[in-house]
Length: 365
Image: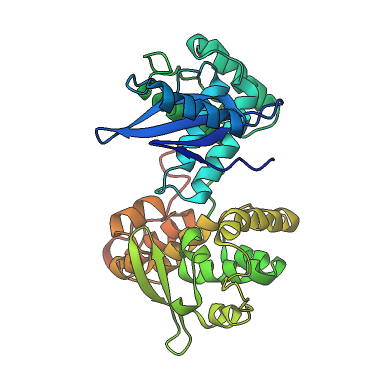
């Protein structure tokens, strides 16, 4: 993509190219100034840099700067709206580059499917046609939902600056998302998957299994979080930091990781760990012919092992970084074998002297 022309300053006016270029080589310029402490945009338009310079000079010389105008008055279509909205996101210092890049990617798909539609004609049928085209292209419902959410955000911004109709953008129903079953893996299945993983994938898997940590906590690990002598690891999640002991096997596996010049813990980005680990685990399960489980299944497995080992709830919850209630409600999966063990331990059904009444199939005949 051609590099945008450098900004212009003429008197009190400052202009920069915010969109483009078009096929004729012109960029969309926006001039700004401050009036009584407030920002105003007295001119916008498609122009080369020299033409923009002449426009600014004419405004200064003609004395026509007293009448403020809407800098977005030329916005008519969804493409115009998305381009202007993206330009404002790029100028916000509070947004990270990753966030802006995500906006840009989603806006590119939206502009391709809705670009020429006039904003005043936005209706349910228009959005349903966009939805159907994207789903036929194989996009996931969750990704489509993110795209439509970006469109709603841009639409609200358009209403604020006076270019979109004063009504909410219609909502459309999305196809039901396939929900993966919440499988808690058996220890033998964990061993099978571990044997089929290699490199950072195997190490991340072992650490998550040994700590019951969230995938994001594992992905965000840094070398200063590992205390080899104490055999502990510091995890930082949504409930705050916590230091937990780390099993010897996982600790030894961690020390096999190379320390690259970029300082990356896993040799890949934290984003890659979060996104890819579940994919590699699912592939290993399919190849081994065992029930497919996700990284969160390792967290549930930790809760189950604590429960079956008789560890008190408070200790287990502190280890996992959750309250006891949340831990039991969302992560504990009670099996039929657990119930049988509980019945035997509590001696349910036993009468005097520990005798159990036998079931006589012939009684009552």
